[in-house]
Image (cartoon, rainbow, N blue to C red; front, top):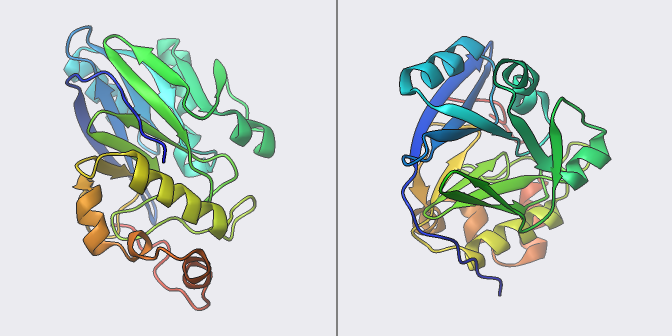
Length: 231
């Protein structure tokens, strides 16, 4: 079993719900209250909304953290780099597999840590939805992109996806993190972000399937509906 020990501190989370046509994303502005330095995770669709919130808070954007390389999670990285001169971080595996590129890009490895002000962010390689998907952990909070949703988990049929790896990624999260950890996904199918792992153990079938073969069979079943019915 892998367990994570990280520095305990407060951090402010601003949840930004952004949209374009049928796509609705959640991106997260995380601020260290001491230094007033911030990172943003998976900035999508509404640049003005993000920039206005940064200005309202009076924070300094230091980094863009990208959970994976799909367009709806990454396309505002370059504009934010141009505006704020911040760094961009993504899994090295994801960068290499999909040949992703943007300005100020840095590759990450499993269990790397990023320090912003007093915040220490642990990077977890969680493939399944994509080859190099990554979640970002701060004490009490996990930002999961398309790996985990409150209601389910990410699809595994895109290039680089793997239901077997998704099973292993969810097992890692179940065993390595406290049950009180709150999950902040990249999309919602109706539930607000911030449910705990213990709540997902009761509500999310992919947290309840503990046999790999049954998990893979269920995740890859045919005729799935509402895959992009984001709320």
